[in-house]
Image (cartoon, rainbow over all chains, first blue to last red):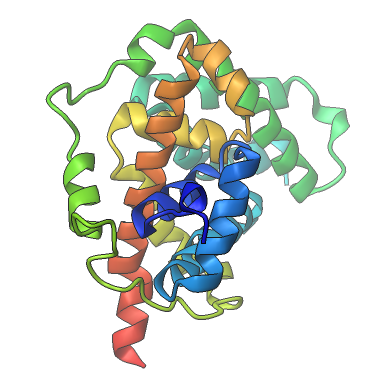
Length: 64
Length: 189
């Protein structure tokens, strides 16, 4: 893998969180995709962030 | 049921959000009172209970944004200038080589439980635990649904500052939900 596109889990996790609030640069998008395909831990973290996204949307639209 | 009673019924719900967003009891009461007053002055405009509620939430959001704008200096003041412990959270999550210290747990596919009142109570408790300044910008993003550039403009923040705050807020919320909801479920079943 190209070193330029290598990210640690910590860096990948930072991108996954940042993605909730801003558009990532194209090279980060690509690096993240490559990392997620090769890593076991980060896809779980991604699922958690997406679950939070989903939960917050439900919470904000919840009517008793 | 009179309009007065219907409006009063929604007071507790509105106060919950106003408190969470403003983190100041007096400001929250102002915003909710003004919202109720606005609803009272439009007796003919509401078809049913849920329309009234939706309308009041919309008005409340405007009132809340006005207050945040007027109080922007106080709103963005970090109440814990010596650091808010976010660096420690980072250090706990990751080893020095950049790997996760422990594998993130499986939160499953919790479609049903995410709609439960108990879950929302935990979510709100977790949001309430955020430091005030961080909690306010996080709620501006997630409850008021403002785009980042608008939050920066309203509060006169740099985008870097805002992104750092939001990032920390999301990590803390994740941690809190893991401890108080998803982790609990994992051990129970």
